[in-house]
Length: 112
Image (cartoon, rainbow, N blue to C red; front, side):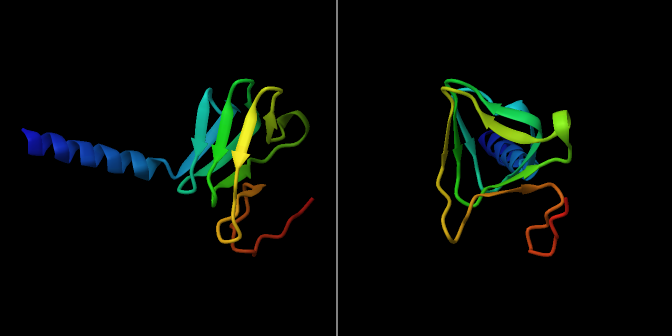
């Protein structure tokens, strides 16, 4: 029974890890202390807010991509009064804010 339960937990954990590689964030990042990690790419869909009382921790090496849109449909990250972002990238693992089509290999031209 223990072996079966441990095997199931390991399987479930691996499924959650595999599915966590790309996350689309809509409306707000959550509440309390929210952690964005480098093993996941975060896709902003429309206006995404860090509300008052929320702290968004962004790990070194994390990639945040804005999805396509203009005007009212633009994608952006907004920190409300009383909200916080704590982000410390490094030269070896920078935090990257970019656009959806960026392949992150330097080959995608920025077009306006």
